[in-house]
Length: 291
Ligand SMILES: Nc1ncnc2c1ncn2[C@@H]1O[C@H](COP(=O)(O)OP(=O)(O)OP(=O)(O)O)[C@@H](O)[C@H]1O
Ligand SMILES: [Mg+2]
Image 1 (cartoon, rainbow, N blue to C red):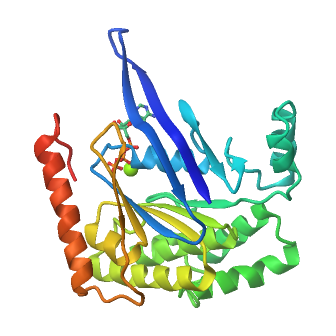
Image 2 (cartoon, protein in one colour):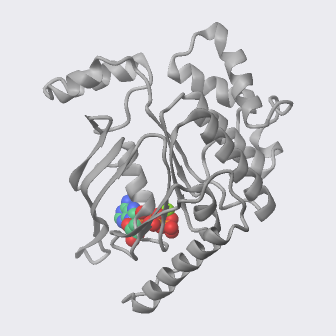
């Protein structure tokens, strides 16, 4: 269970003329996401979706509020290696009892995050990319290759192991990013517009792969997207953010049984409702944002 309690993020910016300005990127968001759910965050550009996602992952600290995952407070990404673990323990040694409950666990990421652009290392082959992640995770040396091959096969990349990212198509690169995220064996995968850069046909195939993977593994998935069709097709629930500063505008449950058909009238109707919310917000926004 992911729980955000009153999360606010304020960025202060110093202008060229030395005056100070600030942006509230996320305003007082409280949200809980039960285990195994597929939740999408939808909202106009600049409304704070990426910032909020990074706060959930512990990659940014909120200005106010807290994030808890499975009863543990997210302070920063959990250590993935023994070295990181020792540094983490030193840093938080005064923070009992929360810290103590964190330290009792073996070093392991609970969360994997997939960014839109830099999810893979261009100088490593597909296989090396996954092996490297497994190495960080502390998988035994002798098992890494076999494990990596298994994760690659799972996302349909068997046969492309020795290719470099530049030799892969955009869709294949996204699959590689997903294989890397899976190899961390996280319980939660956070994805920031993972399919925005690929063509429609590839995007639909990747969406279907993702639904299948999610069904097989039971992970919690949080997906940031601009794509209304993607949100209604994939999600159990859609959280609509208001134009910045990001607050939760609506939460819509998608109670359509799976497997779904994209042409399902219930999905179409939901999509129309979302489009209406967007239009309304655009017309009433003090400064209009791109969608
Ligand atoms: N490091 C930063 N310093 C200052 N302002 C920032 C910083 N990061 C984000 N912001 C501001 O916070 C607001 C939210 O940004 P964020 O990237 O979270 O939006 P988003 O909803 O992900 O947008 P998009 O859909 O375009 O990706 C924006 O106004 C942005 O300019
Ligand atoms: Mg973003």
